Image 1 (cartoon, rainbow, N blue to C red):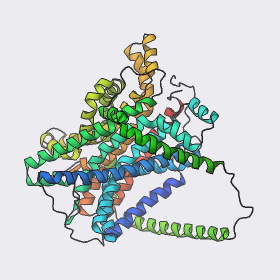
Image 2 (image 1 turned 180 degrees about the vertical axis):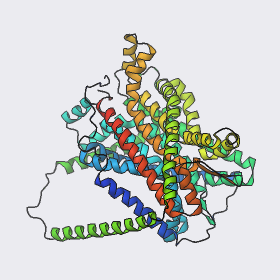
Image 3 (image 1 turned 30 degrees about the horizontal axis):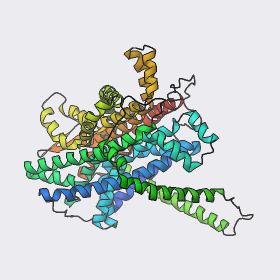
Image 4 (image 1 turned 120 degrees about the vertical axis):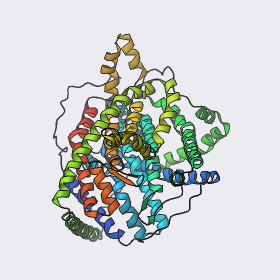
Length: 580
C-alpha cells in the first residue's frame, strides 16, 4: 500500500482549528485556580516531616524494587486506560477533538516538577501523609507516561488506511469488534514502543518522587530512588554499585520478559503483503507459546470468557431500545440541579481566578521581564535539543527498526540508557563542563537532551518497524539509490511518528529545563538564564507568586508552539503521509 501523496492543500485556520478557543481559557484558568488552591492548602502542612529510614543492605533491594515497580505499574495502568478513552474520543469525534486536543496540549505542557512541591504539601494537609506521598508519586509518574501514549494512539487512529475502515464497515463490525480487530492491532507496534518509552521515562520521575524533600519536610519513599540517593549521600560506593546493578538487572529482565515478547507478538500486525526477512523473535515468547499449561488455560478459560462476553454483548445490542414516550417528571428537576451546579462551578472558578490574579499582581515588572527573557533562552535550548536529537535518532532509529538482528543487540542497551535517570548523571556533567566556555548552558542542553531524545528514538524505531516489506522490495526493483529510498519511502513513512515523538520530546524538554537550568551541587548554587531556573528558584525560596507566573508563562509558550507548529504538522501527517 503506497504512501498517500495527495494534492490536498493544508489549510491553516480551518474551521474548528482556531488558535484560541473558549475551552483554552477555561482550562488555563482552571490550572491557575488549582495551583492557587494547592498553595493555599500547603500552608496547613506540617512544618517538619520525618521520612523513612533507608537501609543500604543488599537484602533490602528486592523490597525496594517491589515498591518502585508497584508505583510504576499503577501509573502505567492508569495511563493506558486514559490513552484508550481520551485518544479514541479525540480521533473519532471531530467536535470532541476541538475540545480534547487543546486540553491535551495544555496538560502535556504543564511542568509537573514545578507542581510537585505544591501537590505534595497540599495533599499532606488533607490526607494521611503516607497515602498522600504515594498518591503524589503515582500522579507524577502518570504524567510522565501518559501524554506520548495518548498522542501515539490518536496518531494511529487518524492514519488507519481508508480501505481498512471501509472493510470494517462492509463487514458490519460493531464498535467493540472494530476496536479489537482493526484499531488496536494497527496501533499495536506504536503503542508498545511508546509504552517502552513511557516506562523508561517513568524511572526519571519515579526517582524524583522517591527522593523529594522540602526544607525540614522529608517526603522520601522507600524505593530504588531513595536507596541510590542515600548511598550517594553516605558516599557508600558499594551500595551505589549494588543499586545500579539491580536497576540494570530489572530493566534487562523487563526487556526480555515483557517488551521483547510483546514486540515479537505484535509483528503479526504489520501492514504488509509479504513477511519480513528476519521477523523479531523472543525466547520467552516462544516458551510461552509452546507451554501446554498456558494453551490449556487459553482454550478452557480465556476463550470461554471471550465467547460468553461476546454472546452477552451481542444479545444486549440485538435488543431494540425502547425510548420513553414522555420524559420523566424529575427530568426538569435534574436540569435545574445541573444548572445550579454549573453556576456554583462558575462562581468558584471566577473566585479562584480572582485570587490567582491577585497573586500574579504581586509579581514585579522586573520579574516579568526576567520571565520573558527566560522563555526566549529556554526556547532556544529546546530547539537546539530537538535538532541534536533528530540528527542522531533518525539514522539510528531506522537502523534498529529495519534490522531485527541489530535490534536484538541494541534494544536492551537503548532501554537501559533511556531508563537511567538523567539527574543522576547531572553532577558528573557539572564537574566536567562548568570550567568550559558556556559550561552550565552546555550542561543544561545535555541534560535536556538526555531526558527527551528517547521520545524521538522510540517513535522513529516504531515507525521504521512498520514499513511494509513489499514497499522495501519495490524500492529495490525500481533501482532507487539510498537518497531516493529515504526521500520517497523512509522519511514519508516516519513523518507521523516523528511528529508524535517531537511533540512529546518538546514538552519533555521544557519540563526538564526546571532541573537543567538550576542546580545545587557541592554546597553551591548554579543557575543560568531560563524560565526553568526561575521556577526552580521560586520553589526553593517559596516565592509562590513568581512560581505561579513562571509556570503559567511556560504553559502558555508551549501551547502556542503546539498550535502554531505541531498541530499543523499533525494535520499534514493525517492528510498526506499515511499508508493507503
